[in-house]
Amino acid sequence: IHSHSTFVVEQRHGFNKSTLALFFQDKLLTLALTFVLSMPILSIVIWLVRLGGEYFYFYVWLFLLVVSVILMTIYPTLIAPLFNKYTKLEDGEVKTAIENLSKRVSFPLTQVFQVDGSRRSAHSNAYFYGFFKSKRIVLYDTLLKQVNLDELLAILGHEIGHWKLWHTVQGFFISQLYTFCLFLAFSFVQHTPDLFTAFGFHYTVDQPMPVFVGLMLFSQTFWSPVDKALSLLMTVNSRRNEFQADAFASQLGMGEALGTGLIKISIENLDNLVPDQWYSSYHYSHPPLVERLRAIRANTASHSEQKKVN
Image (cartoon, rainbow, N blue to C red; front, side):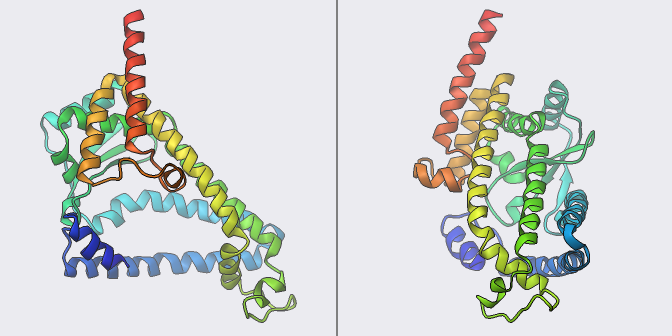
């Protein structure tokens, strides 16, 4: 499926820049990392479920919390560089402007990197990472070619808005709450023989519970409708956060540049500008472009009125 998406769909629309050699290299590297990282994590989770007693879900959640923090720490510095080349952004107008923006909003920027995203795809992106007072901004080389400086700063203003409004911390806590609730719910049905026999597995309560099989069956039956409902709520919250981050950039006086920048990126990425309302409300973590532009213009007008009053 991924090969068809890359070499047929993406290729047809001019996005794919990857070669077969690079594609299989990425696949093998991803498989190796998945095996190296997931096997010990899964083994410890199974061990905790079996030996953790009545409150195993708390120990599993605590362990996965630690794992999440570790992976968030090592991914940008140890794992991501295995796939892409990260170079420090050269001194110049762009870097100076980004540093000035960071100082203006008290964003604790320590470094700006450029990544060779064009090595695999023509799609563009920008993000930041880091804990506490050590933040790093990463810019795709494709983004630097698609927008001008004012638009780039507005897009970064949007991203910094997520940090300023605590959206990143909020997302982390939501993911941890999700994990805790999943294993808490699993604790109520883990020793239910019908969960296994209904799918052809032989299990009685006097036998050791096959944890991995139980988790798979639970996640695909009992938890599946819950997951759909929670996904909708998380999508609603994500879209709300996007509007708020847009409003933050608009309050910095960057609304017009943000709008034109989003239009350019959407055109370059061949985004669906007017998707079905019901479909997008469930599947799109970001609001459609037309809705965002409407809100940005309203925020920009409101900001202008406030400046006149003051």
